Amino acid sequence: MANGVLASYQSATTKYTNAYVDPASNPNGLVRADFPMYTTPSATLTSGSLRMMNTTGATATVDVAIQDYTEQIELAAPNAQSPTVSNFSEFSFAPNSKVTSSYIIISSHNGTNYVPGETITISGGPSGTQTAKVLAWDLSNLKIWYEQPLGSWPTTVATMTVTGDGGGTGTITDSYVGTSGRVIFYDRLQGHILFQNDSLVNNVKSLYYTEPANQMVSGIGGAGQLSVSSRAYEWLPSLSTVTLYNSSNQSGTNVTAEWKQTTGNQAEIIIAGVSYSNDQNKILKSYPIPNNSEVSLTGLVLEQWQNLYVSASAGVAFNFIGFEESVTIS
Image (cartoon, rainbow, N blue to C red):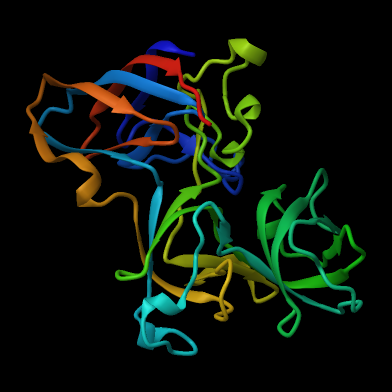
């Protein structure tokens, strides 16, 4: 368990990256106004205070939320889906199931099916480990929906072969690069998927939701692992678009995102937008902090896998100071 400064983040200043940021062309990383700066690890209760300091030269406004998701995926209207549906209840996204907007289309398929859960290995592209895990296989459209990609193969335009553990093979013709993660809740009234993004690395690695021994970013192993702010934040935020790479789009082009549901008859679902928080989760909204001032939120308590989300109109510095204690989860 960690104590003291659990996480630090400065809006529009703190660098972050993801697997598809080329360090050669963008050596300084990315910045953004908002970030899920801290996530409570498994079987843990966190108590603390959030200190916000503004030295930007002018008043800045901040939002703070405690939420159990990183993104709110907003579906296109039922009559905008293809095929159209009567209402959002016709879609199904089961809690804790994995969903994705990343897929590839192949040609020259050898006739052996790819199997959900198996590893696919990509050859003929970049050197090093180039793999992913199959979430779904659409035989009629020769489409492999995947998660947990390793390597830069999804953004590479080359003649690459994809081979499944079960013997399926094919040649990649189109690569649609999106995101993947875990469903928290599906709102059938609004058509919203609350989603924890697998790519997020702050004080923990969200990919290892069910693996407490592997989710910490601390270099200390075993029982001494600490849940402290990463020196290298990572996130590939979901968008309403995915990036298509093929022979005609070697640098990538944005196209409307589609998400693969986990059950149900609809093969994929069209997305209209993405939000990273919503008002019902905010404990501060558009709160003004004058220049050269500090504001503290005390008495914050977060249960396992709740995120502390912060956003600011300028470069406000956020420091989350507190302690973690282990709790028993039956």
